[in-house]
Length: 147
Image (tube, rainbow, N blue to C red; front, side, top):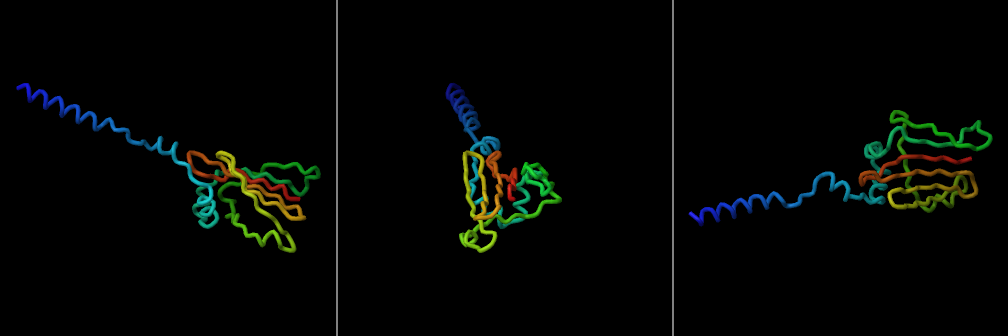
């Protein structure tokens, strides 16, 4: 009789201890997962469906209107229907072109990355701002300060 009670208690302990194993929950996995920018950026530039899925619409689009004499930027948001696919790839030869030459600089601080295009002896100046949200990168803002 006593051995049956001991066996029963051992089985109960084994049963309850199996359920106590810490399993990652989807929300804890999301908090731990951090997508790297470089692979994301490569796919963003080559897969148009993926690109559209990684943009926060309406996309903040700051620019200097042609009629603006004091060069003040205004936000003209872009909705998903008016959005045109971007190609932010770059090759060093673009900085050596005779006309419209530019350089690209990518800066990352914590969960924000700036992709900047700056003209060489011209007025090109564009910034594309990406933020990491819940571990994934998204394009959240475009700033075109070109003159």
